[in-house]
Length: 145
Length: 142
Image (cartoon, rainbow over all chains, first blue to last red; front, side):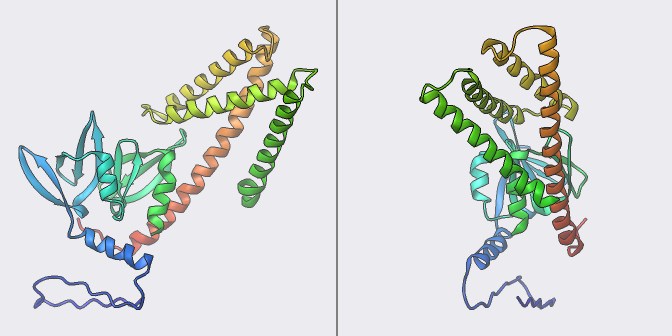
C-alpha cells in the first residue's frame, strides 16, 4: 500500500482520501480506525461535560458501577457502561483487558507476565494495569490488526 | 520442541483422557464395572470440570499479589480435592494416604502451573515484539 502525506501550512483542515480498487474487510477496518479520530466520548469533571477525543484516553475503568475515562492528567466520569463502550469502541484501538477495564492499545508500551497467570500492562505514562488471562487473546487479535 | 509442547503433548493428553473417559462410561452403562475404577474415572472427570469452573471465578478476583493469588488457587483446588476424595471414597482418611495423594496433587499442580506460565511467557514475547516494532515507528507526543 502506498502512503502519501502532503504537509502544508495552507491546509486548513486535514483530509484523508483513500484510493482503492476494492473496499475489502481490511480497508473497512482502516476506515473505521481513521473515523475514530473524529470520535469523542462525553466525560464529566467538576460537574462540567467535556468531549474527550479517543486518542487522549489511556484506559476506561469501572469502579462500583461507575465508569471513568483516564486521560494523561485528568479522570472523567462517563455515564455509559463498560459493556456499551466496548461495543462502541469495537473497531477502535480499544480492547477489554479485564472485567472492569478497557485499554487504549495506542497507549500500551509493554506487557509482562506475572506468576499468577495474568499480565501486567505498562502504559507510556508509566501506569500499570492488569490483563486477565481470559482477555489476552482479545488483546493479541487487536494488536494483529 | 515448541510444536511438541503446543500440539503433540496436548493432543496425546486429550486423546488419552477422552479414550479413558468414554471407555469408563461404556463400562458403567454396560454394567461391566467389577472394580469400581470406571466410576472413579467419571467422578474424577466431573471433579476437573468443577475445578475449571472454580478457577474461572477465581480469575475474576483481583488479588493484592501473585503469591496470594497462587496460594488461594492451590488451597481452593486442594480443598476441593480432599472433599471429593474423602466423600467419594477415592482414598481412606489415613496419614500415609493423605501424604501420598498430597505429593501427587502437588506434582500435577506444579506441572500445570509451569505449562501455563510458559504459554503466558510466549504470549508476552509475541505482544512485546508487536509493540516494539509498532512503537519504534511512532514518535509519541509528550
